[in-house]
Structure formats: C-alpha cells, structure tokens
Image (cartoon, rainbow, N blue to C red; front, top):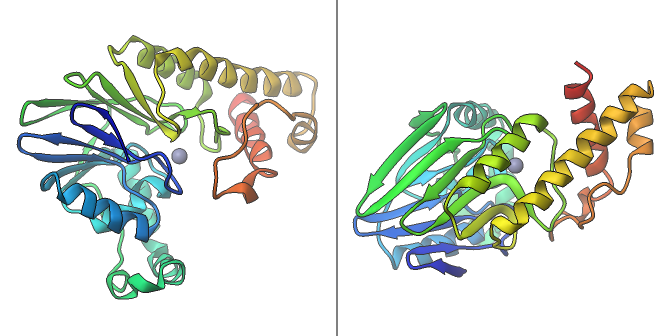
Length: 273
Ligand SMILES: [Zn+2]
C-alpha cells in the first residue's frame, strides 16, 4: 500500500485493478475494490484502521474493479452502465463463488455468501459527493469503455483515472470508444492533479498522458489503415503487431498472445462504421 498524499492511499501490486481509499473526517471513501478475496480481506482490515467506509465508487464495468465490493460496507456508486454490467454478472455468481473458494480455500466460509454488490446510486455525466472536508468530483470519461468514471479529489490534488490510463503495462481496448478516449485524456490533462492513480500499473502524474494519447492514436491509425487496405478483421489481426511497447501486467501473462488480437477486433468493429 502506498500513501500518495495526505489522506489518500492506493495499492498497485494486487492482481487486478489499483484500488484506493481516501480518509476524511467523516469516514472513508473507497475507489474500486481488490479482485481476489484474500487481497480484499487484507485491504478491509487495513481500511478499518482509518474509519468506516461511507462510499465505495466503482470506476468501470469490469470485474477486476467491482468483484471485491462484497467484502466492504458503504453505499456503492458507479456509472449507470457499470450498474447494468454488475447486474448482468449476477447470472454467473455461483461459478464465481466456486472459483474464489478454490483460489482462497481458507476463506470458504466467508465466500459462502459471495454476491455482487450492485451500485445503488448512479451517474450518467457528473456527480459531486461531499464527505467531511473532502470533495469527490466524479466525471464520466468514456474511453476504455463508454462508462469510465474519473474520481478527482481537489483537496488532495489526486485523480483516480480508471482504466483510461494503463501506466507502462499493456492497454486493454476490448470495449474501447477510441475517439472519446482521446478527448477524455485531454480532460484528465486539464485537472489540477499532481498524482494520478491509473487503473493498472504504477502511480504516475500528468506527464504520462501524452504517451497514453499517442498509444491510443497509434492503435486507431493502424486499424484505420488496415480497413482502408481492405483487410478482413482476421488479416488485420495477423498484420498488426508491436503497437503496445509494454508487457501485460503480472498475473495475466496468459493473455499476452491474445490481447493485441482482441484490441484489433474491437477497433475494427468501431472504425469500420
Ligand atoms: Zn477494465
């Protein structure tokens, strides 16, 4: 766990996303949750030292950000699209429960009741939450998915960017809206934040945003060119390699082969229109 400003903590070493929390005078506000049960239980114990969880904000609709909600209290807040995705996941809750029991057998009894906690407050564009002396400015910033939410805490000059930033680890575009992503990166650049907590990879700052932008632009350019050349999606997948200079993050090395192909398929579908 890293202390990244006076009252903000984040973890970049868990399997899955980078969760964080903010300690206010009136309790704790969490941003995303650890994916693996053992990590979530440890994180819960750590947070308990700082206070009661008041709000739990999920920044996007992927399981590595919301699966751990089960282990925490607090009102769950997310984009409406993320709420829909979490509700859809409920159809597979039994498989998830069994998978987690196998991964963390020592937590079997807690996992017996595993369920997906669904957001009860949603936003579609913007929302501000005031807790203690802290302000949480939530803004929909489409990019990695249409439903990304950036969480900016001006008093701390910190922003949780969601997966619109992958810091020096391979970027997932499986549900991307690429042109909106470029715009959202411009908006992130304008926030008066000294510290960025990316969705994945280490803590960074705004100086990384131009590199992230040029990566997304490179993906757009490569797939646009393939479409202009009349390639099929399979041909484009075979031809487009080496766009992302970084390795996949630890724990999901098995994805390394498949990820660029998944990214090409998504962009092909979006850009073909
Ligand atoms: Zn994601």
